[in-house]
Length: 211
Image 1 (cartoon, rainbow, N blue to C red):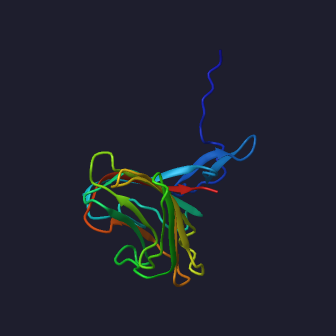
Image 2: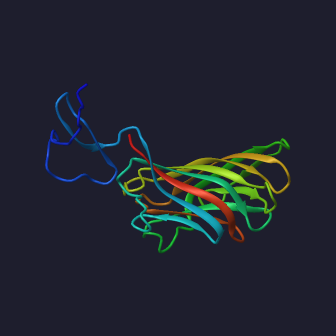
Image 3: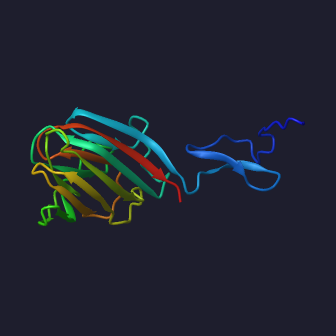
């Protein structure tokens, strides 16, 4: 039986790959470095441990948060607060995380819980006001946040997502949240922090979604 050896001698050009590209076939006889189409690419995972905040800032700690991807997604799992009855807030930055916006044009959080009560909040100082988190065992929450094209400077960006929290009152609370920037500008960092106290534990993973 013949042994087939794979190599890259059929590559189309001599330059090196860009970040997050893969080597793939471009025809029956040639291959090249191409964007990883349709893939979720894990950029960075941060594990909170009595953390005042969790941040993802472009160019810091191996984080990519620019025009490399058309949409970014952040998944937070098993998030527990250090204090009882607090909200998880989301903020964005246009200066690499040196400062964070505290005024947004429109924000909205809507939800329901197993107690059948409806909660609707509007807090224009944050993008998402997700809660209520507890600090007891099992009082944790998960979130998914979508950040479309953050580097486009002429766009009134909307950051939005979903959450589910085993809240401080013993109910399961499901919510949707969104916030829009006051001005049409790019942003390059996002921050998560509790309305009071630290994030006791949880993991936050930033993905770039190739389209």
